[in-house]
Picture 1 (cartoon, rainbow, N blue to C red):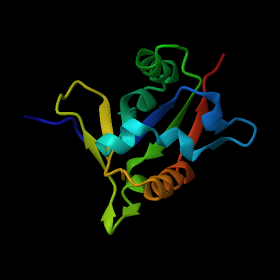
Picture 2: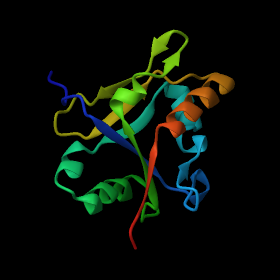
Picture 3: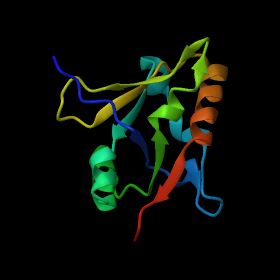
Length: 137
């Protein structure tokens, strides 16, 4: 089965204001941690290369709105895959796994640790390399 091509940029949709600071333009590590991430060993992100190339920011946020049951999605954290791949966890670099379905934009950052202290360390590194984008109102 063919996978979707490896993206250059992925985004993590942020559904809660407490996961970022718009005054300082900062994404908090909490945007990358939840029990599901630790249980399944991955962080859900989305390939946004096509939307960025076409300068279609509204379409990016509409993807996030489909994910959260209480849209509109207020923010997103964009990450360069090349930067994600520089982060190490127990001597293993993180990587982005694309969907098995070529039409799906869903990807996962792997591996994500179940151990709390390691999960926080990885989330802090991801937050450092993230670029916050707020929804235009």
